[in-house]
Length: 210
Image (tube, rainbow, N blue to C red):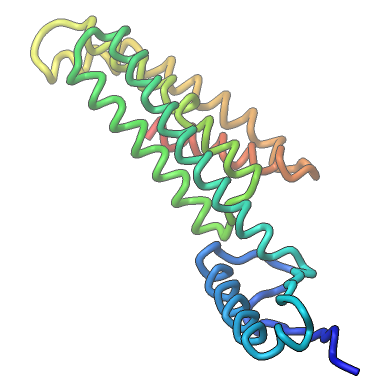
């Protein structure tokens, strides 16, 4: 009789079945598993009559591949949002340099929020990818008001800044305050998406106003 089937179980000391790690960490373990399967193929393929079939019981490697999709969609969605924001700002101000500076401000808000949630220990998933894609839309509100007020003002740069903040400062502050207060009840939601949406909204509004 000849050997037709062999089952071998491997467990990684790094992968946690109850948590999620970064894609590069999981991919390193995935590559190790692939190298093991190829080594087994070289020794047992002839005896077993086939190649190794690897099964991910905790679906860590499936989520790893999904993370790549999430990252691509989040980056493309946010960049499209920033590009649309630039067009809106250019139409509103009719000045390329003002629209460019305002767009840089939106991009800085985007980076700040992503950095903040990373420091909070969040990993990139479906909810995070969706929320990152709509960050630019939340960030453009205050910037476009201040940019338009600056363009409409007269005098030197300092005078125009003073007039812009004098005209729109209280309105921007009131909008920031009401949005932050509105996001607080979302922190208490049991549904993960709404809780994370509240965090994203609060951070985006705070960084945009600052």
